[in-house]
Length: 251
Image 1: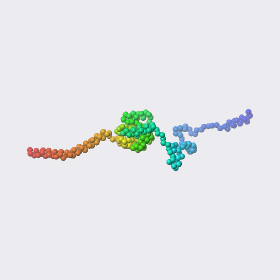
Image 2: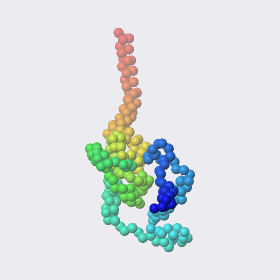
Image 3: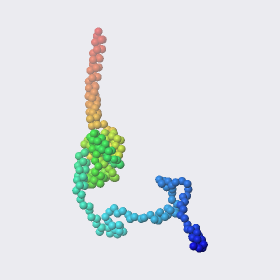
Image 4: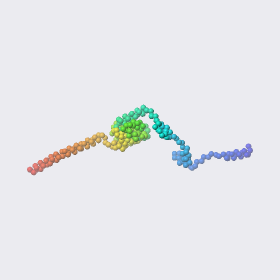
């Protein structure tokens, strides 16, 4: 091998660049709270972000929105679900037979919390029902309870009882069930809101109201009796006093 070949190999090795990794800064990158990207990277992310089509919530094709005559577009009705009709029938029967139906917002919970709530309500003469807001809306559609549709939004459930007097017990134990919040309800066929539920719970029981009514009626009767016999009693007292004075004078 000649000296020229050796020299060319040495020069060739020196000209080959080596890969080096350089990290700017001395701190490790925070994965949980990454730094704000630069303006160039933000522009690149905005440009390269994929554009997905809008979610079609109806069966009408999206190009029909630009058409002027939408009357020609027909949407096929959904097939009748027998199980859903059975649930709607049960909810209608529940709303027509129960004196107290409370509509509650149902938050996240586990199966153990739901079981404890059912046991607590059962011990106090109440029950827990979860059929879904869609079922409740269909069950009350076209009835006098259709105004309750505003309550059936999101995840809702029903707490029902045979007597409307259980509302006082429910308002007391509501704090022990953290995943439900009372929104309104139906008491004795009357739609009430949250404030009216609290007012109804503050009223005494039916026996206490009967006692107050009897006392009010008795007070009027006693007052009337006193007014009628007042003059006779006063006359008798005056005559007895006059007779006593005349006996003293004779003696």
